[in-house]
Structures are given as structure tokens and as C-alpha cells.
Image 1 (cartoon, one colour):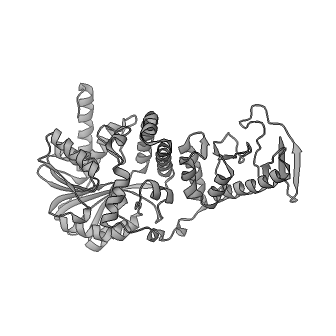
Image 2 (cartoon, rainbow, N blue to C red):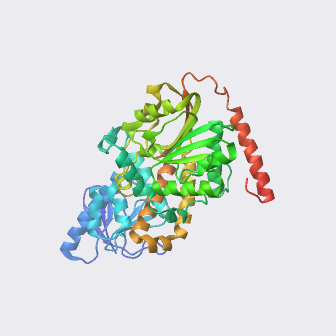
Image 3 (cartoon, one colour):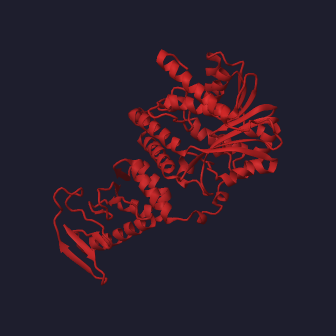
Length: 459
């Protein structure tokens, strides 16, 4: 093969070389060292001119992304590989227009090109994305993000319902293929290694219930209940009465039918309505995975609604994807997966609490639990890949694969966080002064689970 090398004097030197025996690169590929690029062997003047621009684009992209340990394989069979002691995974760009698209808008076009099959990865997609994200983290300072969420449309009542339908009303059968048996579509909790996703989702619900310090006879208001698993869990295991709001009609229908089937319809009321219309007086408030759909312009209103509904001696918990700093949601995610979605920083979340004198009692970050949750979802999704392709088409399936891998990489690298915030009215003095009761309940739950497992029954 031919390889062009750029020496310190600023001159290109072309030498004839052979692909090394046992190399991870096929013959005809080349290695990018500081200033070295692959060159076409026999494409003529036009081909060499095109390759000159292509390698310039790849080099700029690689530098823009923080020089991640990822190779780039191009449509002509040429490769650009960063200096590395070990073999690195590769991004394969299938055609020249795809390269230009990626250069113009990499954060959007990576997902766009992948879902249409014009970009592939050699190696695990989540691993490649994790390497890229770590490079970007080094390259970009959080302070440059500013307040770009202002560019996103405000989630009005009408828009919120449409956004929910876009994602959650794809059909219960689709989610049933790869979620756990209770259809819990939020971060699981893995207090012990080797847990199944079913066990970890129950552990998450128990974790939430312990923090809320539920007791029989209490009333609970839930905003955004998904398919109803948490509401039913609270009613069944803690003897509380739950009123749960949701704007996804498919989820509400599923939850109501499950409550009826399991004999809990008299203790759980599922309301097909928006959180803005929540009314009543409750001992507890909980929201798991709903705040991401609210948007910062509505945080003060959410705080007002909660303040009106939560009793003076009540407790509240908000569980939400977040960030370490204010930043807009990736444009590809916003277009295809979560229109109207936004992951807030803790500072932004305080707009819910401060205007209404809520005391923040506890903040826990369980982001690595979400990375592990996504690993489970990805494995299950891949097992039903052919079914998803048959039902929705390959573009849809690739879109969801990219979303799951992208999310896992973001939690793994710290680009996304998962916050659980417990709060109460500022004048509430009835809260325990230590966490001892939470730990005691956790120990009792673990003992009960072990006993049930040994006896082969459901805890």
C-alpha cells in the first residue's frame, strides 16, 4: 500500500509499504500517526484530490471529538487509525455524502446516518460511543453550553400529550418484548451483583418506597405512572391508596386492566390527565421518570401544583435523569426519541423547590445503575431484533438500538446522571432525624427476598 507521511519540515513523503503480518487492518489500509494518513494507490489525480479532502475532514472530526481511540474506515477501503498500543474499534462511513454530513453536524448526523445504515461500527456500538463521549468530554467545557434549552418549545398541555404519544404509544407489545415482566421503563436498582432486571426493578420500587417512608392508610399522588408498576407495588405491599396521573392512553389502559385483574382497582386510581391538573390533598408525592418531559419553563408551575397537593407533614420524591450542568438534549434524541425531553441539572431542579420553601432532605445519584439497566435492555432488545424489524422495519430497529447504546454510553461516562431527590415542606418537623429506619427496612426487605427465593415464592 501507499502511505503519505508528513514530517516536521512540513513536506509530504510517499513510500511504498506492505500491510504488516497479523495487522488488524486489511491490506490497502493505513495508519494515522501524528501527521500520517492513508493515500489511494491508483485513483488518478481526481481520486488523490478527493482523498486529500476526505482525510482532512476525518482529521478535523477526530480532533473536534477530542482525539478518541477510535479508527475511521472510509467508503474507498481506506482507514484512518489513531496512535494506540492496542487494536481500536472502527467507525465505518459508507459513502462520501455521509462523511460530509457527519462533518457539518456530527452530534445529529451520527445517529441519523447509523439508523439509515450509512454508518456502521466495527465492535460494540456502545463501546464506540463511550470512547467518543469521553473524547468530547475532554474537548468541550460545560460552561459553553449556556441556556440553549430556551431554543426548545415549551411543553404545553397539547404538546405534552403529543410528545408522550410519540414515544409511549408505540404499542404495549413493542415494550413488552424487551422490558421486564412488570413493564418498568425507568432506572432499575442493583444492590447486589448478578440480579436479574426483574429483581432490580422491584428493588428500585422498594428503594423509592423506603425513602417515602410509606405506611398503611396513607394517600399517595403519583405524576407520570408509566404502566402502573410502582402504583400497584405501593398499594399491594404498603397498604396505601394511590392516585396516578399519566397522559399516555396506552399506558393508562394497560395499568387499569392490570389493577382490575390483580384486585387493586379499589386502592389505585389511574387518571388520564396531565400533571398540571392534579388536585387533592396527599400524604406523599412521587414522580419517577416524568420530570424529563416537563421542561425548565414549567418547573415553577410543577412546584406550585405539588405544594398545593402535599400535606404539611408530607414527603415527596422526584426521580429524574439529569446532568451535572445545564445543556440541551441531543437534537437526534429530541427528534426521534423524546420530543420535548430535557434532563436538568440539580441547580435547575431547585426551581421546583425554592419558590415554595421546600426543604431538600436527600439527594442520591444512581447513574451507574442506569448504565447497568440499559445493558439488560439492550441484550433483551437484541434477542427480539428480528421481531422488531418485521413489525416496524430495519430503520426503526436501528434507531432504537442507537438510542439504547447512546444512553448507556452517556450514563457510563457521566454525560447523564440519575437523581433521586426527597423533599418536604420547610416547616415539616415530623421527619426522622436519621436514615436508620430506611436502612432497617432495607435489611428486612433483603431478608424477606432471600427467604422467598429459598422457598421458591414471589416476595
